[in-house]
Amino acid sequence: MGKKAPRTAPAPSPPPARKFPLWILPVVFLAGLGFVLFAIGLSSAEYEVDESPPPMVTIPGGTFWMGRVDGPADERPVHEVTVSAFEMDATEVTVGQFAMFVKATGYVTISERVPDARKYPDADPAYLKPGSAVFVPMEADLGGPAVWWRYVIGANWRHPEGPESSVKGKKNYPAVQIAWDDADAYAKWAGKRLPTEAEWEWAARGGLDRKPYCWGDDKNGEDGKWCANAYQGKFPAEDSGADGFIGLAPVKSFPPNGYGLYDMSGNAWEWCSDWYDPGYYAVSPKDNPKGPAEGAIGVEGERQPQRVRRGGSFLCDDKYCRRYVPSARDKNPPDSSANHTGFRCVKDVK
Ligand SMILES: [Ca+2]
Image 1 (tube, protein in one colour):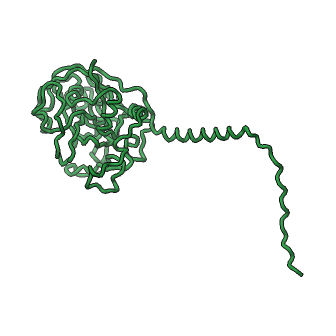
Image 2: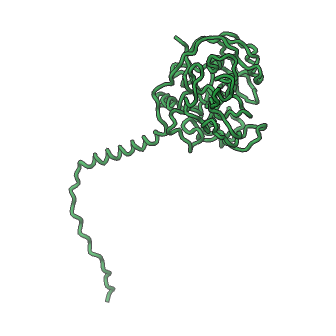
Image 3: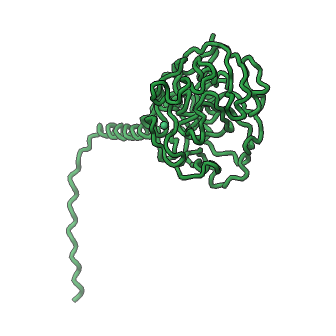
């Protein structure tokens, strides 16, 4: 006998044909499209756009003593300077306001671009990727190099402390990780310009004459309250936040100075239009000085000429960086950025 043929399952009868309503196809398509657009919307909602530019206040013209008698060498000699009236942003440019600039122009900031290897011949190729300087708290010798700064790939104005950080919900915080070139581009788009160093210091003093602070003589203000967002605790290991803020604060968190300007002391460094030269005060003209024609080379080992920045930041500590005072000068190359540096703009009075 031959092998018994294996049993085979009976063929299933075909299911009854369904009538598929054709009208469902466009509905499914539109639902899918909606989902895709929603997903795109979610990914771009990493920041909020503020269509209102910073309010501006009029700074009167006048003559003042620029610099500080007992300050570092680059703040001397104290010299008389006359500044014409101008208008100034009352606050640092915020995340939301900078986002409006990016939305309108498609501008890509320096820290979002691949670094030019020719500018950094000694750099590890692994770090020649878009990124920026980020402060990292640590125990460190204040007399040594500033090892608390790290180049973090993926850090930029949308991710100030690195790719895992965000500015979501922070549209009223100062925009940081802004290079001078970025600030200058924003200013031109806004029909404004960056302040000269002299304008900045005149404005920061708020009508007070030769006072150590933007608000007068006493560090914490006459009523004992903190008047600026700086650093308390043990720098650079632990910020106690005694002034109410560890890290950046929303703009207008502290009282304005005599001209109605907020955060001219602390919070975020602010770029000025001037090139930096530590000896400029000895040769500065009296009327509306605009800084040297070019930046000094080799200052503190920096190969590039540098632009002035002013005002100090949330990282200013009395024992290390007491530069949240109106006379204090600082500088950085124009293509550099960090998570404590932003800007505000000015424009001429019509
Ligand atoms: Ca603080």
